[in-house]
Image (cartoon, rainbow, N blue to C red; front, side):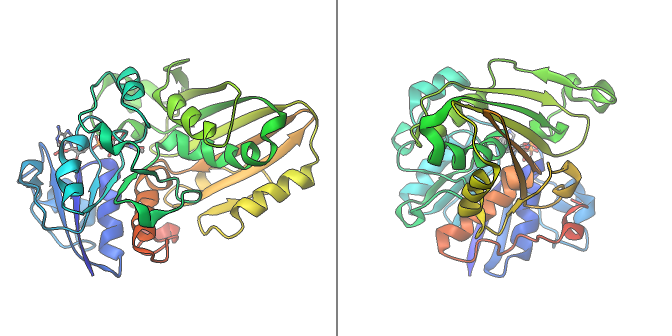
Length: 342
Ligand SMILES: NC(=O)c1ccc[n+]([C@@H]2O[C@H](COP(=O)([O-])OP(=O)(O)OC[C@H]3O[C@@H](n4cnc5c(N)ncnc54)[C@H](OP(=O)(O)O)[C@@H]3O)[C@@H](O)[C@H]2O)c1
């Protein structure tokens, strides 16, 4: 049995870590740490958890110590690398839901996030935890949990890049996210009243996740340009992404279907669909639903995930389970009814 620290447990993604730890058969205790909400009770911050999760007082992140086995960080970028090194030096397991350890070099981190990385020595010893793809979990104590857009885009494109790389001419993803993608912090742009009945693109040509996706695709020898265009969707959660891969020849549908089956048939949280998925099929679950369609010299992959679960906390729990060599679905309910009230 293990003890877990949930740092940022008062936020949108942290709340799901709380719920998953509460259900996990091998987690004997978990403690929640945060910033402004330190001193409040978790029932006060999340009244819907009354009766579900035992009450506790949220601790200040400044009181973080070595008393846990695993630490989930669900903080804004630039925060977790302040705490992770002391934990890693003490042989603790760290799973960061933020961006601090995702990029492989400090220059790229500075260029993308505008911050000097204070622990660059860990950038190459982490695992980039795209749970269906990542391996060698016994070689690290540090998991960089992928971003939400990268989770959908990489699960869509890696099977093609891996097996048909030579034939690819370009890859681009157009993606839509629910408003919770930006976290709890209030901002006028993200108000429901500003977004209701509308859709808009944002960070066009410069979204930070483009760098992350490109970095990971290169690990499969991708040599082509990649582009990500992101949009805000007036729903609470969900990511819908369409990835278009232009190829130098037409591929048969059956052959491409076979690549996806080969890649994902054994994976509990990927559902291959015969038609493009709908967001409502995955909201409140840890599933990534995928459909692949071949049309002339294009392969089009549509993907749907819940950004807070498969794009963050659900995948983070898969990663904890994989670090311990447990069944990766432990603690994560695939039961939609259990999760939709989160
Ligand atoms: N939202 C998503 O869909 C999503 C998906 C994938 C990854 N992520 C990443 O996951 C991380 C958390 O995202 P979120 O959406 O859960 O954010 P959020 O709802 O804004 O929650 C942020 C959490 O961090 C705490 N916090 C804020 N500033 C802090 C500081 N200076 N020191 C210590 N704690 C601080 C907050 O505590 P208080 O409430 O007490 O202030 C809160 O618990 C981010 O890095 C985000 O990029 C988010």
